[in-house]
Picture (cartoon, rainbow, N blue to C red):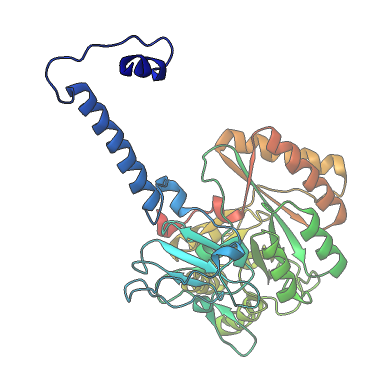
Length: 397
């Protein structure tokens, strides 16, 4: 009866197995158990890690606003080697060494709480972060009676490098466009900054109004900016570039005083461009001190290309000044068709020699025509670059 009871309790379909001779656990069962234990152990180790596995490149990417749930975590204290002073923009800059990669913590407007973004910058790219491009770097500012003057930083950085708009660095067909006369007309300036693509460089007239405010708006919109300097043309004073014009008859000290007045009208620009000046730029005695001053201050010189007699290329090379020569004035004739023809000519030049430079003024027609042309040129593979991107820089060979 006992055997019958056991048979009834046995699951249906299983035959009665006779016990094998010998006892113990088979080798296969041991191996299977070890595999299970290994999997459980590895899973537990991963689950208990403080930080999960991450791809290396994900560590050094820009970070959006920190979620509220993460704000309670206390930030790690910086070691003495990592500590670094804040730059002039108000952003904290740190890195293993001042010459190495820099980590920029961009704070909120109130300056409280966690940073809105963390930007890790390669030391080979000196250009200013566009989020803080409107804020002067104090290391590049020299105080004067008329206003802030650009100057090389103690570590050798130049306004030309720091305030340059970033670009791709590619060696395809590039066109740099400079639109001048900003700040003369307030409504015209506002329209130009709003309509022109950010890659277009803007040049400010020193006689304009609210230049500091317009510079900030332009830089926040992504534009690179330069200052215009009035130089003596032929037929002066019948043809007069305006207040504080640099002239051939003036002493070097008088011209430098007028130059510094123009330079002090605002900050955050990469260089200067002549306004008129056919006679002045052809005189080495007059032009020499101007170029030497630009070299000392780390600024570029943009020649609008209006005078074939200009000595600017030779003097710029001598004084270590980044130089850009304009290829054509795009809007000497205020007609849409004529302006488009000039712009198409720039495109052809850029395809032939790598780059081309066009100079124009902030007329409504010019601004509208350039804006639409840039959009189409990009589709054809033309890169619109800031004027600093096509400069011949003696310091970089």
